[in-house]
Length: 201
Image 1 (cartoon, rainbow, N blue to C red):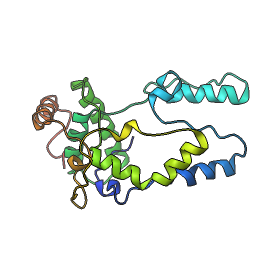
Image 2 (tube, one colour):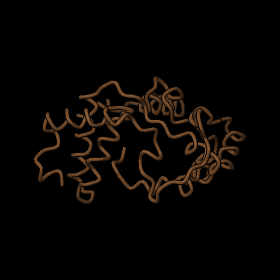
Image 3 (cartoon, rainbow, N blue to C red):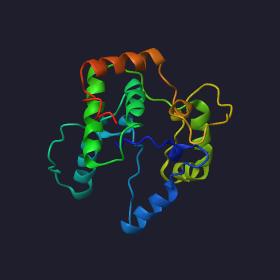
Image 4 (spheres, one colour):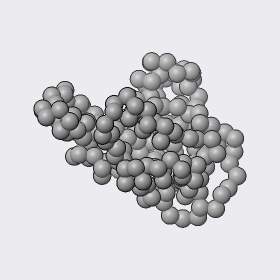
């Protein structure tokens, strides 16, 4: 996971991941059968990316893959923590190894303070716009590997809307109630996880 507040990268009119080109590049480097799966817990062995990787290595080479145990696997962030982290990091200095470490520590502490949070969901019109922009690659993926992405597009009003430039986080992601964000920020400040006022930038 990377902490970055530059939302312009995710404007649906610009965001583009070269799915087909990436898969073809992998096939050119490793000729033969290419294993392709959705990067989703439901599609991963044991719901874990590390366990899934071990299983695939074991099957491919006929040996038990002995990899070190990983303390944190499939680490993610809750919706309220995302908005709290975004509001704090917007005023941080430029990225540095130290700021990245602080960002991860802050994320984990926010998750500890509010362990049960709603998941992050794109606004339906954003998800549909991204799907349309990737339609050709997604059709190729379905034809070549039988993988279809539909559920992530979500339900609801998908009417296209004007976005700020760069877009605000709340324009891309269905936001939590403002009170929830304020309450978590208050608990975080009370626990002094932000450090001194000079650290906050």
